[in-house]
Picture 1 (cartoon, rainbow, N blue to C red):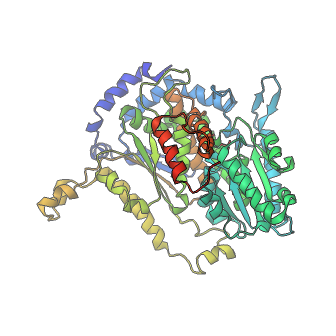
Picture 2 (spheres, helix red, strand yellow):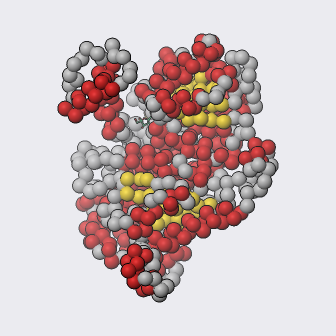
Picture 3 (cartoon, helix red, strand yellow):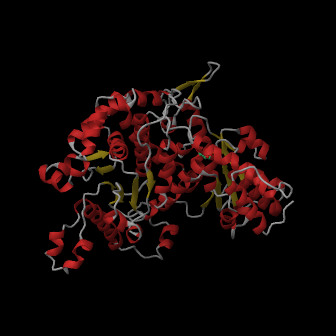
Length: 566
Ligand code: F6P
């Protein structure tokens, strides 16, 4: 059922019309138990939703809306492996990637042949594990007999953002000898800076591309291959290149042996693929047992999402809260602010997850939507962001709902392997004082309080402030935020966070009635770039056939480029 025809739609529109009357000070004053009531546990995460502009009535209507549009059935259909990605006729089974051994999920192909998905995944993971153990133990040798020291993951979008984000996030758990670098941009500066100072004899490349047709990845992989073979000869490719792909024949054409290709399937969307072989670089860095811990964290949230009733389903409630702000209250953006330096790449990861999934104007049935879908997702790590854009969050004219993410303990403290030499060197042999972490947490909590409750003009005046400055020093407050707190950023907690956001994204997409699993919006730019590339290189084509602005820019490029045409 389209959401605009539900009984909840007009009620929620009515409630949104009085949105500006909602006041967090009043909501807290009216309910002494609000903080407690709206703080929801999810695995190891404590999720405080109480500083959101929500009432019980609004929440009930949102849950009713989700129920009427069939969210429960949508969740079940996804988990069963139905082809809910209708425009590509594909199942959507990232949850199977982290399912426990023995879980029954069968997929049928168009000829009726069935695959036991979970068994196949566990066989793949056993291969990944053997490979990672060999590399980590120094037993996978390069062509000149040296162990691998640097792994370069070449991929883009979902084949880069997940592993790159998680590699940073789990820095405290990394192997002391191996380091990973991530190359995604077709701008040669990216590959060049990754290769700088490396010894080809101790470098391993992972070419990560589900389709193995992505132009940027193939160009970077080709250049990396030349860098390697010019130094070590053609025969080096076998020991220095592996691939992750759903297109093994294309991998073979590129020159990577099938034995060195780790499989993917079309039912894993790129932006949902960290738990697949796309996570190979992460598994190399943190080791197979820690990778399994991340999967078990994801599984914990998957099980909750699959079984909890909508009204107590934490990703559903958080997703509906985001949908309330975007669709009913017309708030165009939302910010994610991790107060954890290790999570500084998390906002970029979420941008692809949410905006590539739900940045759509057409419903699954091809009909245009008549409401707003995906907000702009943005953010940066605190406390840096406080000295950049927080001014606008506190006193700007646009209200931005914020997610704060914060941990009770710093990344490196108290880990069982804290004493290993790699870690101690990081701190110059000294213990990091707790004062850093306490200051970080204090700032995070202060921001949430200031956004929600502000400082009235009376409160400012009471401090003896010059009356001319009172309007400038007043904080209206009433700006919504959610705070997500956990004991420490472990692999399991990272897995829980990822699954929490994935299921929020799913919740919103299904309620909007859109297909969250295709990305046709990226295609036009790709095909135009192919045409324009040929035109930039051509010395004979006088007038390219684009719009006047693009034609003129092509001419300017030809005039200004130092590269000789023809
Ligand atoms: O162009 C968008 C996209 O298809 C993303 O959805 C995907 O994550 C990325 O490109 C990379 O794709 P591939 O893994 O096939 O190289």
